[in-house]
Length: 280
Image 1 (cartoon, one colour):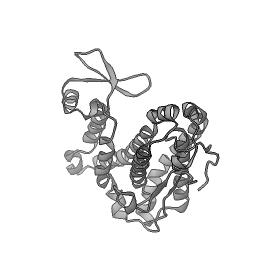
Image 2 (image 1 turned 30 degrees about the vertical axis):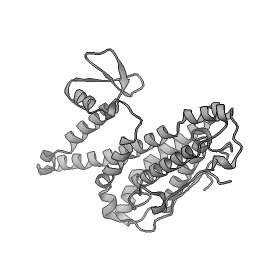
Image 3 (image 1 turned 45 degrees about the horizontal axis):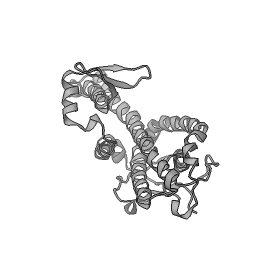
Image 4 (image 1 turned 60 degrees about the vertical axis):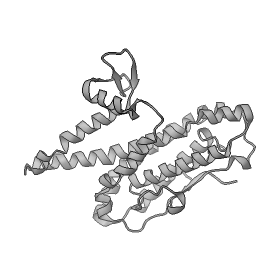
C-alpha cells in the first residue's frame, strides 16, 4: 500500500532574480487558487461592487473579517472584504508617490510593504486554501452509507492537493519551477494511498477528525516555525543563491506530517494512523 507522502527534490541553486520577482510571478497561480474557493459571495461581481461602494467592515471577537450590510441584518464571512483590506494596505504602502518621492524613509516603507505582503500573506493564503479543501464531509457520508470511496473523487482530491502542493512549495521558495497544472510536468510529487486497495472502515470517518486534534496542534506549531523561516529563506537565496538544506528538510518534513494527517482524517484515503511525525 502506498504511504501518504510528498517528494520535493532539493534544488542546488536558485535564481536570485526569480526569488526577487516571486511576489509578482506568483500572482497568477495565487489567483487560480482563490478562484477555486467553494462558491460564496466573494465570486459575485455585484458583491465586489457593493463592498467597494457602501459596506462597513468590522472585526468579530475571533479576529476574522465580517461584513454587516447596511440594508440587511445578515452577517457573514466574506473574502472580498479580506482582499479589500489587503489592497488598501498595499495601495498605501506601495504607491507611485512613495516610489518616486526620493525619500529614503518612503522607499524603505515601500520595500517593507512588499516584503510583508509576500513573505507573510502568500504562504498564509496558500495554507488556508490547502486546509480548506481537505475537509470532505461528503466522502465520510459515502463511506458510511455505501462503504465505498468513488474513484473519480479520489482522482479529484489527488489532483487538487497536488496542485496546491506545487503552489505552496513555490510560495515557500522550495523551488524556482513555476507551478505546473499537470502533475506529470513537475518533479514535486504527491503520493496518496488508493482507497480501492484497502478495506476502509465505514465508521472511523465520523471520528477521525477528533482523533487527530492533538496532532493538528503540534502541526500548527511547526507550521508557524516554517512561516517564520520564509523571510530567512528569501534573504539566504538572495545573498548566497542557495536554500539551506536544513530549511528544505524541515519544510518537507512539516509538509509530510500534514499530508499524513490529512490523508487519515480529512481525505479519508487510509485508516493507517499517522504515527511518524517527521519521517521523510
